[in-house]
Image 1 (cartoon, rainbow, N blue to C red):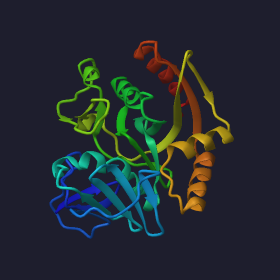
Image 2: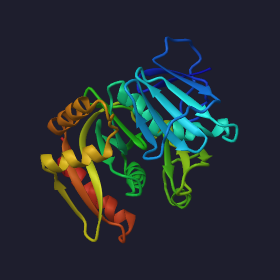
Image 3: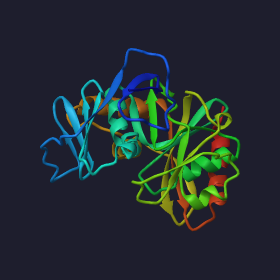
Image 4: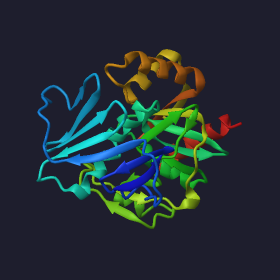
Length: 287
């Protein structure tokens, strides 16, 4: 069994997860990850996610199913064709997102960076350039905080992992120290994970603002109204179908607690232009 500390939770896992630091000392586990070879009989005809009263089933691909229990334990069911050593690639995304949501975290699809002890979160669906924006801000003096999952609890953005998923061509252009990398088998966009140096990473911090990137022909940043924020949070956060009241309460607390901005970015413009435009706005709102 492998022992990890993730978002201040003790994780005991049968699966090795190379993006988390292994702990030597024993502890009382908060989340246990176990592996089974017999696939459960579940009908995933209408969706890859099935919610029941005591668990969540997520089918990542044929032959690989994750079950997240009410106490956030994760059971991984795999067929013989699935390579055990590759399972962690999927585990650290959706399954862990639901496990953390079950522990009371607000979990969103996004990346986070830190400046002056305050977190800037970039939240949105896949393909909007969240990781690229985050890496570009790190090049401009920010600290790296989260990749893929933006994790908030008690008005704190929690550090998740020091690895960032980026395009291989972008790696050759960045000035940031990325001296370790892991090739990915299941990434549809052909990206790889690269490790940020300790000096470029941040610990848990309070959030300052949350930006929602929007693909546009123009560049514009505008403060969002409550109904707009609700729509975006509803679409980009981990929600549990049979815990709607809790989901809505989390979203309402977020709307009251933080500043939200829509960030229209022109993808036809050089990335530096988009990042500098975003940076100028961030600097204008910093305390």
